[in-house]
Amino acid sequence: MSTILEIKNLSKSFVSNEVLKDMSVTVAKGEVVTIIGSSGSGKSTLLRCINLLEEPSGGEIVYHGQDILKNRHLETNYRSHIGMVFQGFNLFNNLNVLENCVVGPMTVLQKPRSETEAKAKEYLTHVGMAQYIHAMPHQLSGGQQQRVAIARALTMEPDVLLFDEPTSALDPEMVDEVLRVMKDLAETGLTMIVVTHEMDFARDISDRVIYMNDGIIAEEGTPEEIFTNPQQARTQEFLSRFLDV
Image (cartoon, rainbow, N blue to C red; front, side):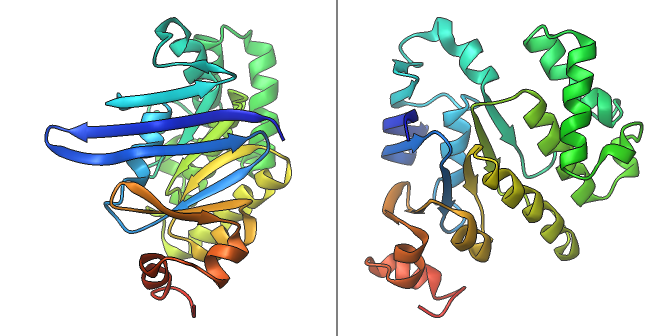
């Protein structure tokens, strides 16, 4: 698989608090990379730096061979190809489901409405929300809103889709419906970087699992390596809260 995104020696500090320390991650096209770790370990900050919602303090973000941080004229194009699904859905409350999905491609990518609507309806069908295209966000459950948020991100047809703990704001009965959609997406070959506390999901769907601790990658490997035979004591301690290791 060809490399699509390479994070090199990335760091991020908030005043004197160093949240990310010399992070390096390579993501191949079609790969599903899951990031696990305790709250405060830097997982969400890493995603926000990757899509430039946060400005990295140092390092490189190499996309298709070019360092975006050194070539800022490429930033707008880069961000349009890096999708993000947030914890809190972040839907536009004044727009219905269909309008939430078409506004990005029409505004950012200058796509014609007819083409964008067709794609949006296709992705809404894929996530099981086609019958709700005229509904407003407040009329939907949390799980339904998150599925719309996924369809909205997909309508931008991103090269990489980032998920920042997409089930953490959901009631337990709604978690499975979102995880099912994400598993289906993984099987289509979509490149995904997923921050999650859902250990079963990480074990079942990932090509590679990264365990972060205190702003660094403490351990990474295949799901079998991480969940069956973790090498680092801190990885073992973390996983012992969820699994028999």
